[in-house]
Image (cartoon, rainbow, N blue to C red):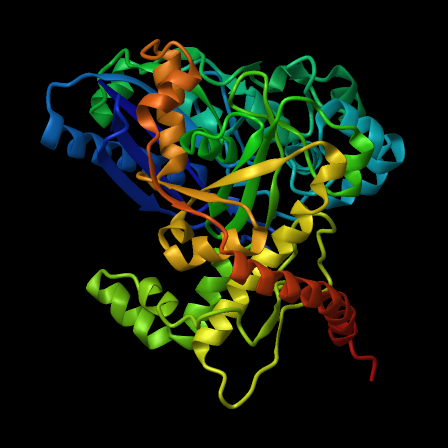
Amino acid sequence: MNLMGIDVGTSGCKVAVFSETGELRSLAYEEYDYCHPQPGWAELETPLVWGQIKRTICKAMVGLNGGFKGEPLHGLSVSSMGEAVVPVTRNREILGPSMLNFDARGDEYLPDLASRMSPQRLYAINGNTLGSPYTLTKLLWLKNHQPELYRRADLFLPWGAFVSFMLGADPCVDYSLANRTLLFDLDSGDWSAELLQWAGLEREKLPCTIPSGQVIGAVARPIAEELGIPAGTPIISGGHDQCCNAVGCGVIEPGRAMYGMGSYLCAVPVFSRRPDPRVMIERGLNTEHHAAPGQFVSFIYNQGGVLVKWFRNTFARAEARQATESGDSLYPALFAELPEGPSSVFVLPHFTTTGPPRFIKDSSGVIAGLRLETNRGDILKGIVEAATYYLRDCFESLPGTGIVIHECTAAGGGSQSDAWVQLSADILGIPFVRLQVHEAGSLGAAILAGVGARRFSSLQEGISAMVHQKDRFEPDAARKHLYDERFARYRALASCMENAMREWNRPLTG
């Protein structure tokens, strides 16, 4: 048995095929770039990206047939980024580009929307507070600035739903992706009539909503022949990428969290009961349906791998170029330079807009404590420590919500570093688990495909069969004590530095 997971991100698509025991049998990846047609705009050229996604699927099928020819593909599912949607017709014609969540278009509607609904009421329905990343404001912009495109579009599909639709599925979106529009009712599992009326948007332009792990169609013959996928392969509803990452980590019950170590550090704790909106709003935390039935998740995040990439490009540019040319990664060598114990360098991880609870825009990053004897290993360790301190600050606010985290499962590129995972366990004071397969998003989608195709009787059975622990990292008591002291200093200094950087960023008047 083979199961395919398609993971569509902002800058690339990954397609993996797994056996029913979780063996990675084929893996392919293709990159694409988003564009800035005007200042403040950020969008994907949908036909180009769809072409890259198809190319990635073809490569994965070639890899599968090279080693496992003749073994059937029993199902596929899609994990994707949230918020961004694609305008299409019901006969699968792509009508335009896809605005990304950091595109500024639609921000002008926020004051009026905020005046007509309280944050508490919005959160009670949708589990989010009003903001610019969500689909709602982008659709309002299209309706007002590109009315002909808006009129012609039969549907606006989130990327997971779009890819499934183009492969032959019905136009359906799972609950977790639907929630990223700001138009979804968490309790009813359907589009909210109240929120649609508030926004002035039409229900008929949105796909039907369903749980993750449901059959929504089959691969159509023309696209099957183009991609090398068997015609009739079941297509199963997937999920928001963070939810699929959690499934691929086996994180589907309360007390555990997926800890994504990619461009952003993102902890995704699981809980069964929706917390009081008031306490969640105070902490800047959302509530979203998990891909696991009956469970919810929230996102605790800030910059992570993007800071490490900045460090690499700033302090090791020539070495990075040489490593790229030889097909190697420079990161293992850089992390080998980390000093023992806490870094002597203090870093404020505000290099771009921060995550919860305050989503700070007007600060800047700081590297303090530099001396002549400071080396780049000290600076790198200071960066990854600070990124983890930021999340610890959020973790320590969780008891008031009823959300608990007893264990984290690491995923993403950063999880391949023993030093970084151990540092995370020491600072957060929580055991970390690392799995045999790093491709958690595509693995989670493949597990959902197995459940929907009835190869597994439940999500738990699929996880038991396909998710396998490799390493466990317990917090070191001595290092945790040192980091507790460092964290207290970080908290004191972060507030001072944040205010100082606001003053530094203030425009000059002379």
